[in-house]
Each structure stands twice: as C-alpha cells, then as structure tokens.
Length: 244
Image 1 (cartoon, one colour):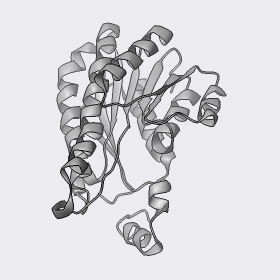
Image 2: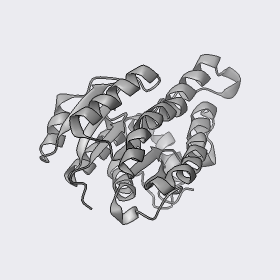
Image 3: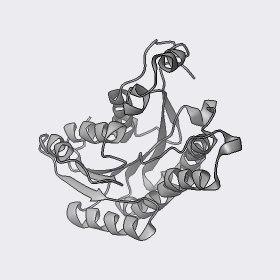
C-alpha cells in the first residue's frame, strides 16, 4: 500500500486507536493531520515524522462547526487537499438507562454522531473537487450487539452505520468511498482498567481467545484507505475476534 502524496485527517488522534492509525498511514507515506480535544503529545508527532512525512496537529472540538471548518481550511492550505478522513473521535458516558441523565445522552450524541457529520461535511467538499477520497468511520461491535449501560454510545455507533451506507450511495460517482470499521474489545487503557473477572467475562465471548490490539484496527483502516480497496464502499469491516 502506498499513500505517497496523500494527506490523512484523523480525529481523536492523540492516543490509542487514533494515534496508531496515524502512525500506520504515515509508514505507508501519507502526510498526517492529527485532531484531538486535547493537545497532541510531542512524542506522537515525533513518531510520525520519523517516517519522513509531514505531520500537522490541531486541538479540535468536533462539535464546534466553526472550529472544524477553520481546521479543515488550514490543512488544505498547508497540504493541498485531504484524501483520507478517519472519523475516530468519540466519548463514553456510561450509565444504566433508568439512571442516564439527559446530558449524558446528549454529550455522547453530539461528539460521536454530530461530530462525524460536521467533520465529514467540511472535508467532503475538497474530496468532491478532487474526484477522489476515502472516508472511514470507526463504529463498534456494540453498535450491533448492544451493551448494558451503553444505550447512548451504542446508539451513536449504530447511527454511524446508517450514515456510512447512505453517504456511500450519494458520493460513489465522485470517486469517494465510505466505509466503517467496527472494533470489538481492544487492548487499550480502558480495557486494561477492568478487573480480572470482567476481562475473563469478555474473553469468554471471543472465539480467538484474546482481545484485539490497536494495530488490528489500524491495519483494517489502512486497507480501506488504499487503492487495493477501491471497489469497496458502504460496507462494515468487523474486527472483533469472532465475537459477533
């Protein structure tokens, strides 16, 4: 896979899955634009730049339309275009439905679903002009299976699937593909914080007998962003070890 001459924008790129996706795409030659609610650690920038590619970094709230448009314009002015968009930014506000506060529902919807709308709406203009583009949305296994205490989060991840399938039908004639990756349980700080019994309960549901690694998700995203996946659009790639 070769992304030389292309620029990728990854949201929620400060750590975990987003950061790993950014590093992976840089290794294949893509210039990288990182966007995150929090300032990006200098070590992340250095790791990406070691691949000889350009790396831009922006503090961005994806729910702020004006901020999104401003950052996208800066990226295009600096690099000439955006060829790959990875909508990875997301939050959780877990609670049982009977106890869930309206703000817990609204905050998760605003970041995980409305944020994808804002960023994609801003980026897709330049992709249409280029007559090419790759949009990859990070969904989740719980968007399909559901999960107790995550009615809000699961709803947004299900919503991303409808978003992906519908948008792919609108922009396919413009040379733009739109796909989603649905991770299962991935070995991140969040899953590492679970106690042993919780981890064992999760592992019992996974036929491969282990949690996924962040590289497993990054590899899937890189494939969907590549020319090798040029005839794939409107689909969901499940990366969950067989649990769903």
